[in-house]
Length: 100
Image: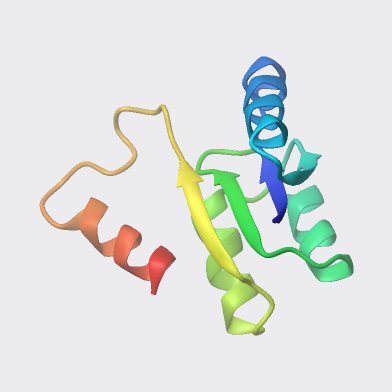
């Protein structure tokens, strides 16, 4: 499977890419939302793996914009920030949108 991995932490990006490649996937990597948007618009990916909190454009905003233009395949978000999805129903709401 050809994947686009967008993660702004260089160490985590290397480890995730190595694991995905070790599982047999072809992985292109970017380090911010703008680079990821360019890659999706100019490449062909079966799935996207995006960090939620990236420079320039966050992962959720990026996927929403790509989907409005019909350019986004299945997406999976990664997050390490404890305050991103707090509050009743908020986490469930963006997860539902990402996977529908």
